[in-house]
Each structure stands twice: as structure tokens, then as C-alpha cells.
Length: 189
Image (cartoon, rainbow, N blue to C red):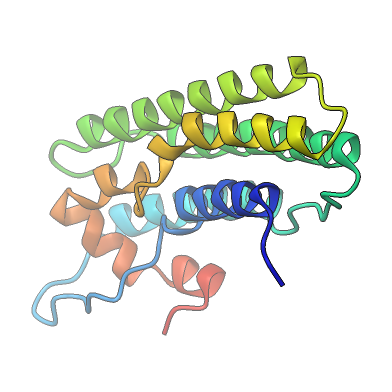
């Protein structure tokens, strides 16, 4: 069965949201066997992963939609984009509420991560506004709306999302890797 442009766009939005929200605590890199994270840094990572989990839960079930019902599909995508903006706010809030990471250059890492989240939210909000204002009456108009959304959202495909700025700090990366909360929330071994 051929995938429609609407399904491809929705998959793009879903993958982007998942990448932004779920990559926060996961890593295939083993922890440095000779070093362990500072307990305060571990507690901070636990708070961040808990906050990310709360945000990602809002996106765990993207709505199904029927491309043969263009107006219903548009409504479903608008609802999902609204949920995505709330989840991005929750994630940024979770990072900010965790406080300054107790590691060298921790505030710089937080500032970079939250700036990335704010920029992502701006793109999602712009896409949402365009989609809300678009007139969708048939499949062709739906495909145009989806193509416009794809263009705006294409810049959001960075696989690690804003958390890469946190994980770029070696002390925080070690804390994320060793965090039992992160492993439990994301099923990491």
C-alpha cells in the first residue's frame, strides 16, 4: 500500500518529537568503568529524565487519521502539533526545574539545551499556525498543507535533539549513562 504524503509528514513529526523527547537519556556508550558520576550529578540527571518522560508521555500515541477525510486529518495534525508544543515546554521546564547541574560548565549546557528547545518550539508553533489557517477541502489541499509543514519541520530532524548539549558535557554524559532513573524510564540495560 502506498503511503500518502500526509502519513509521511505525520511520521516525520512523530519521529522528530520522539527524537527530541526520547533521546534525552539513552546512550549505547558504556560508562567509563574507571569513573563514576558524582551523586549530585546523578540526582540532577534523574530529575531531567523524569521530566522528559512526563513530556514524552503526551506524545506516546500520535492520533490516527484518515487521508480520505482531509479536514479530519488536518484537525488531527493540529491537535498533535499542539501536544508537541506543550511537550517541548514541559521538557524545557523539566531541565530548568532541575536547576543548575552540579558540574563544571553545567549552566552553559542547560542554556544551550533550552535554547534549542525554544527554537524547536518556535518552528513547531509556526507550522501549527500555518496549518490552523490553511483551508483544507480535499486531498490536494491536504497534501499542500502537509508539504508546507514538512518544509518547516525538516530542520528539526537532529537525532539527539537538545539533549546533545547536555551530553556534550562529559560529567553530565556520565551521569545520564549511569542514572538508574534514565535506564528505568527508557528501558536501558
